Length: 305
Ligand code: DOR
Ligand code: ZN
Figure 1 (tube, rainbow, N blue to C red):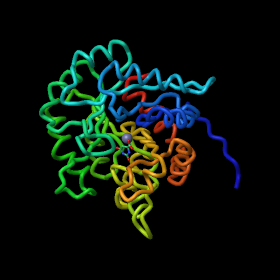
Figure 2 (cartoon, rainbow, N blue to C red):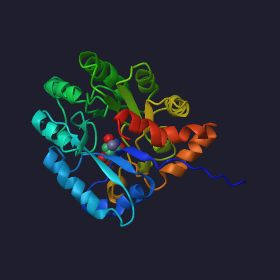
Figure 3 (cartoon, protein in one colour):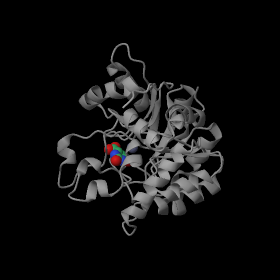
């Protein structure tokens, strides 16, 4: 096999879990080696809900970046029904807060403090639209009557679409999309909606964790869906459409928490994400679209240089 050299601008990761303490100190090197910036998820225990929390967490991250590596953590606040618009304003004015993250309460890891009644946060979202700060959404309903494989599609219909009709100026990133429904919704949705796509959802479908034995290291949320959805994600990112950009959702858990009768959701991918993505884009004859996906479309939606 002939060797190929491929040079791209240093990528950014628009959705990353770094955790805290010892875990943070051990995973940071993998993101810092490969990425210039990353949007840091706020679902710590307790979550990052105020600008003061974000300042303190950012300091803890900066302290463990290995010497000589350049890496900028872009901080997010965890939206709750008690979030104060004055606090958001302070975070934005100080240049500390880049976005807010909406977790429907109970949708995923450490989301208990998330939003229960979407109507209760509409005024906060209107304020965010005014100051032009993006809302990042974990787009799954938590209604136990809705099948887990349908939760993303139902979220679009029940929550996202009404929200966007009411506040069309709000810039929204639908995080880690997993379905053709989400791809189609984002494509037809005008300039204020974009989506992150993870590396793993481009590579695995639901057979990966269910067929031939349960493989907990492929379990994440939203769960990987059937093959037709994976194909839709691959064509969206390989088409070069700038509404789609990389958010790895790299989410480390200790082995004991994954290999468990009730294992945690999350796939740790920051170690080898870029080489895996190069395979995906090469398989699709779209290597020329890789740089857009990992280095260009994200900064453009976030209005960052
Ligand atoms: O698989 C996931 N893991 N999905 C999420 O939404 C959260 C994440 C985590 O924090 O472990
Ligand atoms: Zn995540």
